[in-house]
Amino acid sequence: MSMSKFWSPFVKDLVPYVPGEQPKLTKLVKLNTNENPYGPSPKALAAMQVELNDNLRLYPDPNSDLLKNAVAKYYGVQSNQVFLGNGSDEVLAHIFHGLLQHDQPLLFPDISYSFYPVYCGLYGIEFDAVPLDAQFQIDPADYAKPNGGIIFPNPNAPTGCLLALEAVEQILKASPDSVVVVDEAYIDFGGETAISLVDRYPNLLVTQTLSKSRSLAGLRVGLAVGHPDLIEALERIKNSFNSYPLDRLAIVGAAAAFEDREHFDKTCRLVIESREWVITQLQAKGFEVLPSAANFIFARHPQHDAAGLAAKLREQGVIVRHFKQERIAQFLRISIGTPEQNQALIDGLGDL
Ligand SMILES: Cc1ncc(COP(=O)(O)O)c(C=O)c1O
Image (cartoon, rainbow, N blue to C red; front, side, top):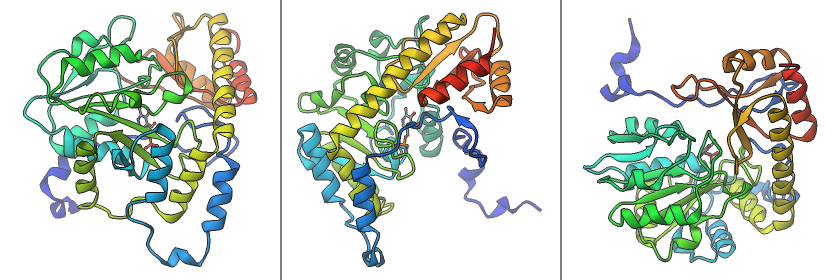
């Protein structure tokens, strides 16, 4: 007999997010989940090592003030404009729950972060998937219609395409009565953050993560910056859900990571340089590569099936991400690795 009789009824209809594979084999060249190929700041590691002591018997600061202040200082905002969570996925969950549940449908691109429809399912939010244009770009004009909120990644995932700040502003201006969430998980690899706009647009919320440009995916730290009234809604949800989403190690490690600009600048630059190399190599093999401002690229080959290419690469020990989704089923999303990993990718594709 099924044990699901014990479940709350809505659980039966949940469609959970499926994260990219985290293989137990360590020899694989892992270009499937947009992690940073370089390690985190040595200063962040050192700060966590110092924190690894008897004080772990004590609860962490529920407000993570040390980290809030570090983030506020870094972006030139007040600490009551900063919200923190256990990865930006958790921050996004609280945003969907606390700010995007309204009578009108939520708008997001048809090709976008696949967690968005999952949160809509979890919180019973209606949404309207707005098609990207024929070049896989977001057209701000498409969002100028009645809505209960707007969310999009910038750069978009999995396309990697960047929307200019003026276009973000156009979306904000057209929907002054809705919350507009700009998910900047990948912004540090070539874009300009919309955090500079939060003081002018009380409906703007920007999310970021330490998982990508700060190479701390394993630590789970994400953040949102916006008007204190938006942050207050998120704090209410957080304090009704989990008072301590960030542990002691995460608080000090993330704060130290924000202070180490040198490591951040250097590793971002290396990833960007490698991205341009990978794009040139793929184009030489006949791939069409969408313009990317992220730490991954989105590419298709006119003569080769994407699922077949992904399988072929896997046989060579290289894993990339393939989405079985309409419009993008012939694309591969490939994270940028170290020069050696990128070479393994190019070699693994062989002669096409
Ligand atoms: C667009 C986008 N937003 C948010 C996230 C979540 O990142 P994290 O929960 O590690 O902060 C990801 C992760 O891949 C992403 O691609």
